[in-house]
Image (cartoon, rainbow, N blue to C red; front, side, top):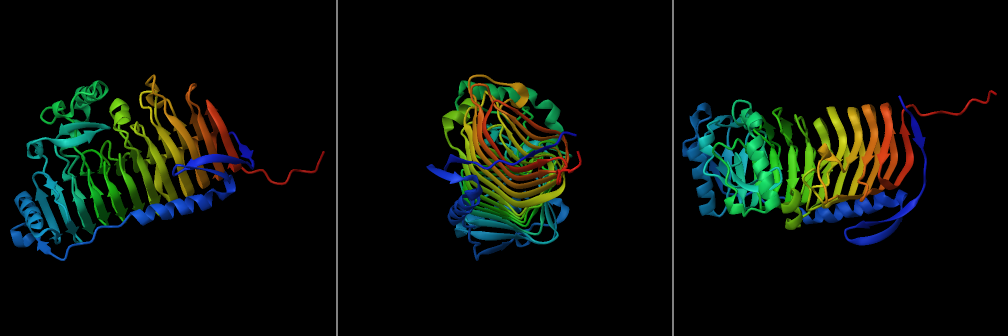
Amino acid sequence: MKKIILIVFCSLSFFCFGAKININILDTATVESRAIDNILKTIEAPKVSKNVILITNLGAKGDSKTDNKPFFDKAMKQSKAKKGAKIVVPAGVYLINGPIHFVSNTTLELQKDAKIIFGTNEKDYLPAVLTSWEGTLIYNYSPLIYAYQVENVAIIGEGTIDGNGKDGFSQWYDKQKPAQAKTRDMNLKMTPVKERIFGKDSFLRPQLVQFFESKNILIEGVTITNAPFWCVHFLKSENITARKVKFDSQNKNNDGFDIEYSKNVLIDDVDFDNADDNVTIKAGRDREGRETNMPSENIIVRNSRFKGLHAIVIGSEMSSGVRNVFVENSTFAGYCKRALYLKSNADRGGYIKDIYINNVDFGEVEDAIYITSFYKGEGEGHETDIHNLFVNNFKVKKATNAGIVIQGYPTKKVNNIVFSNVKINEAQNAISMTNTENIIFNNVTIGKEEQIPSSKH
């Protein structure tokens, strides 16, 4: 096991919210606190309507057999007519053969012991709707819960959303490659979006929950399980609150929250248990992402418990850029392969900057912190600018592979990274850095911390 103890004090200039600030690295906590306060002032959860629609009064049955889609569709129509309503789902198991399409000013409340479970006949999720798949806009099967161009919407309660992915769409994983490659080719050629028609026979799995071009969003309290693809996808949306959500989703690509082209997001007090990433921050893929120019920004993740593949990920589809991300006061609920993972390659372009990690603890991981400009070893001509990452009060019990890895690009080095008060008790390899500039270590211990030296000759 390699060991390293580094103590360095230094100051630097960096950008935060567009203003250049000269600051000693020990003062970043003040800047971080002020920035978080400013973001929180912009985020307000939607108000719940006083109009109540009890789904069972419309004929719905929580018997796990009745197809309740007609009743959920009727409830949404009534909410639209009333200019807002709370749709209440009492205890029971409600089969829904097809998607739920949200309307504005609507809250879906899943009460304790209520579960909605989606049918597995892919035809029920057609016609295709405008959505996104791995960073490229396409027409595809409808997400199971789809909120498109709406505002003031919420999913709340102590119930469960079950995507039934294991017995349904998740079985398509091994069949998706031809259509997946086609989406990427359309992206690079900038094929008109109206011509990007997938759906039938494409085998591109839909997201479980997607908010698209929407604002004033709340998801609170519910348990999310068995997703066919990504669990919750915030796409080109803003003013988002996600709190006290519980994940238990173990299929392939079952990310918890995917935040894409979105801003002003609070993720608070969440329990993660995902077969893939817990929180992934994205901003479009390759040429389409660069030309869209809609960064994901002003994102706070706090007071949460991580378990799954990777805890916090930025990339790899982040071509519009990611900035102003704050992760604080969180810990682990189990194994994560990587605690912090920033990934891009020379096909992406864009930037990752102004990222703050503070007061976060992990148990056993493979790599504690991994930053790479060579994701999958792909790409040329569009290197990503990665700079201004501040990691403070960061602890890991054991890294079976590496403590800190930074892989910049020869023509665009990773720069202005500050590690302060970092302790990794054990690591097979302590630090690996290539193509970097201005990497600062302040009170960093990887391996066993040495004590007072022996006075013996």
